[in-house]
Image 1 (spheres, protein in one colour):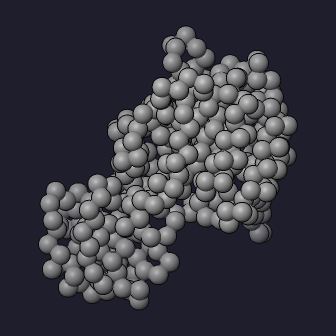
Image 2 (cartoon, protein in one colour):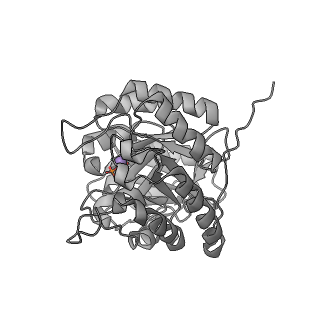
Length: 350
Ligand code: PEP
Ligand code: MN
């Protein structure tokens, strides 16, 4: 159910409706929009008695949401969600494209800084790097853990880049939440419901990658798990799915971009690195992602990919990253977007 407030409803009226919903034993999710606030109701098994709600002061109407996902749905919030990063001009969603670049894993300080310097110079606003790696083999490099998080905190300080890094379980989630600007939940964990709920209790943006064989509904329901706990800052990311095709590591499903945008207000990024697994396919698919209308791109960049401890074959060289930026900067205006080059940090007065 969704309570649509009148455009002129006061904060007190919105608060009173939320309290009424909570008193009924449900959860209220106020979702401010450009014109008016809507309040999503979750936790109800059947219909909520709409008569009482409609009688409350400031309420315009009460609507049933028929989709299985509620808070992630465009029915509940018409305008696109834009996630902003306090003290900077960076945003995910909206007109500006978000570019997240960096190595698959943080391997050591020198490697991380060498790559960060180059992606910052090319104009990325976000730096990625795995501290906790979900590897297919238990014998493969598992990441440096907190040491990697500290290195990324130093990169943030030095270059201003906002940090995106993955949490793989409850323990790493708490640590990642301390250091990161965006918490990544990987494809293998897209349906780890306890992890999703825990991430939903945090107040930090979550980048949720599509599961290896997840349908669109499953993907949006995973986002709903996070949002149902009160964290509405979810960024979706297409990263390829398993198909019969064997010319690439995965099949990058760009058709999900318009499908998500039709059904949901959440931003959607595309990861052509895991989506193809091949360096020579990353640039063409990054260009295509922007042309499709994605809100940005996440790519793996390494200055010495043949020495990389993970995902070397799909990591592009820094000079290819520069080319990617130049190309998508040209494509962006064709689809009504803009590529910001570099991040601007507000210097606090005083
Ligand atoms: C990653 O981004 O490094 C990663 C492990 O991605 P995915 O979860 O999409 O495989
Ligand atoms: Mn990787």
